[in-house]
Amino acid sequence: MDLPLILIQALNAVQYGLLLFLVASGLTLIFGVMGVINLAHGSFYMMGAYLAFSLAPLTGNLLATIVVGLLLSVLIGALLEWALFAHLYRRNHLQQVLLTYGLILIFESLRSRFIGDDVHSVSVPAWLDFSIPLGDVMTYPAYRLFMSAVCLLVAAGLYLLIQRTRLGSQIRAGAANREMVQVLGINIDWVYRLVFALGVALAAFAGMINAPVTAVAPGMGMSMLIVSFVVVIVGGIGSVWGALVASQLIAFADTFGKVFVPDYAGMAIYIVMAIVLLWRPEGLFKS
Amino acid sequence: MRSLTTSRGRLAAIAAGLLLLLMFPQFEQDFYTELVTRTMILAIFAISLDLLLGYTGLISFGHAAWFGIGGYVLALLGTQYQVTNSLWLTLPAAIAVTALASFVVGLFVLRTRGMFFIMVTLAFAQIFYYLFHDVKSLGGSSDGLNLRGKPSTAINGWTPFDLTETATLYYFVLALMVAVLVFMAALLRSPLGRALQGIRENEHRMAAIGFPVLRYKLAAFTLAGSIAGLAGYLYAVLGGGVNPELLSWHQSADVLLMVILGGMGQLLGGVVGAFSFVLLQELTSTFTKDWHLWLGIVIVLLVLFLPDGMISIAARVKALVRRSRA
Image (cartoon, rainbow over all chains, first blue to last red):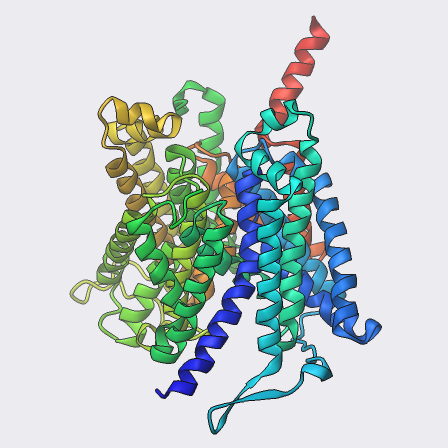
């Protein structure tokens, strides 16, 4: 394989990894801070993609779609936390699995009833619909580079939020000791609600921004959830930094697996996971 | 564990249920005979998961992998490679392969616990899903493989029974379900069964008094996998084919629901759960095609308002009665 082709695949892997990170970081935060295993997290990614598809004709441009979509997802996230997830924090894992599985069934049925089971696509915004030449014959779509850049900005923003702000220190404290945070006079319920809404917004954002390069289709949420689980297993539960490293590792395994062993490509990421499990059963970055 | 013989009413109910199951094919309604056959197969599947969920305290979200492998062993031996279609060879092979596969996977997944275990079992089941979806030499396609008829039961030209007959297959599955129940009852009274229940209650204490906890868990994981493989084999025989959906996470979730519906850690829980699940599914489908929507809503409401399951309704009613008497 020649160099430009490897470069293109590497760029694809980085972009896919950053997208995975957006979904997995929310998942791992909800695990780490609230101790909830959320099977419905993939549904939020799907919701984002379908929001992009439904809002695109109304708003006319990607930026407006994303702004409206983000507002809606934060609202939906906060509402779901208040109505359902807030009751799960003190329950056992089995009850968390059951309730969030029930949510998947509800979300998928609603999607099927109101939007249908067809595969849809969302067009790339006109101002990004061009390709950048790579080498003599190859080109790379500008939109994918744009996606990588935006995802990197979001990741940086997430880092600053958690490490450098008052809210971030409350989140970290809430993960360590819920009672102590309450004793200090902080409203932990609102911290949890914000973290949950943030996780939903990150997943929905990933779905919206990825909609122009992927098919908007039934089942996309579940496949994303399973890959995000693998990222969290490899990175370690509750570790955002672990999620960043693991998402790149998984994305590279997946992308280059498809190039070198196409027949077994679906399994590449699980082999990485199995190796990590043998070496470090609690993930690379145990938090 | 409550012994079955302590309650005479319970024993009578079991005898009545068994009698009903024995008589059922005599009504000669092939559609319903096959439906009950399918339900009994799902019951075996649910019983196997309960060994992990209810008795060992392991929440496996990938149990469908073993179910699917059991079926695929038959399809690969009988159809794809045409090695043999004999029941006496393919059934032991199916159980042996699922035992081996669940043993190897157990070595990985049992290193984790809690939330991790749930995710890791789901991820490992996904590996097998992709194996049977993508790898041509394993019948890889989304359509799966069709069987060449039912497995043959002939021994040196003598055919003791014929699985192509709906009623015969029914009784064959019923006999195996009863055998699995008897096996489970014996297992749970054995030192191994007691140790597993000890691990469910307090893993660290069991380790502290010298039990090799990991080895016991691995034994449970392998046994549960093998019994699920048996169920998957029967499911393939009944359906006449296999496809990767047998190993899908939906299948893993459905069997989890069956165990919870019937009551975790109850010997007959898997049977009650499978029958209630199929009954609910059939009843719901008569008035709506959106079974999943209703199932989802019911699950969410149950977890929110009845976290201890249906059994807690009885307990609450009892408490109310007691209070009104006082």
